[in-house]
Amino acid sequence: MSRQLRIIARIAIFSSLVFIFSYFSAFLYNVNFGFFIIFSAAFVWGLGPGIGVALIGFFLWSNFNPFGPALLPVLISQLVGGSLIAIIGLTSTWFIIPDMAVKRNLFLMILFGLLSGLFYHLPVDIVDALVYQPFWPRLIGGAIFSLITIISCGIIFPIFYPALVFMYKKEKNKSNENRFKAI
Image (cartoon, rainbow, N blue to C red; front, side, top):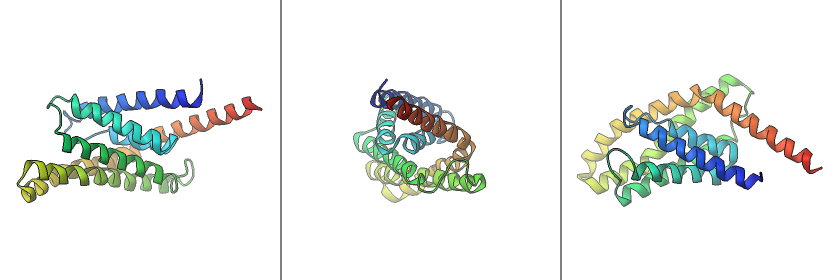
């Protein structure tokens, strides 16, 4: 299978995982494992696949969740917020080297988890407050719930760091195998 087909299949699988884990966030209010999945996709496969996972996964979640579809401005802000998580995932590759300085990497995963939650909620909370009014009470009230997401991402990301390392190593081994097949 060509690399492009593998990436498309992985985007589809990871997007469905974002949808499924976002669905669970309806029951675990604002604790969303989907953020880590988007982050991982961008970390392992790059910005394009990471944004693809974010856009498809959050589009599905926003339209097919138990609370009904999101209004268009809120949907767009969710897609922007998800894309920002992918950008953070790609940026983290400059700082995180799997299997090197594990304690340092775990600290960085906490930091990138907190940033992912924050950067997702900045556009979402602002647009939500603009749409549903009154702006300041809605924004301040929403910030309290957003803190749950931000803190939970700071916990989820380092816990699942071994899964990220596993995926990263598997992907690097496959690219090395394909390089030798071409010779």
